Length: 61
Image (cartoon, rainbow, N blue to C red; front, top):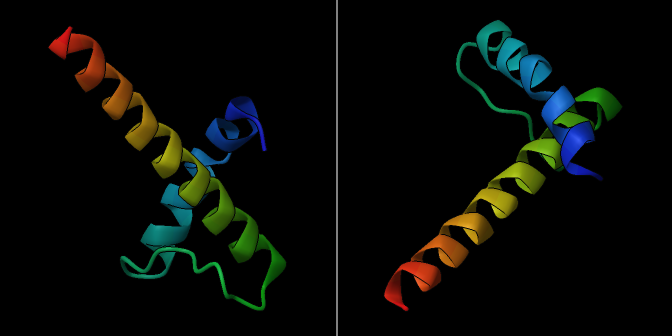
C-alpha cells in the first residue's frame, strides 16, 4: 500500500468509526472493506511512528 492509497482511505476510516459508534475497523474482520480500512489505518500508524522516531533521532544530533 502506498502513502497516497492509505491517505485516500482516511475519510472512509473516519466514517466507519462514526457509523460504528467509535469502533475502529478490525484486521481480522470478515468484511473485505473493513479489513482494507484496518490495513490502511495500520499502515498509516506505522508510518507515523517511523516518522516520529526519525524526527527524534534527528533532534538528538
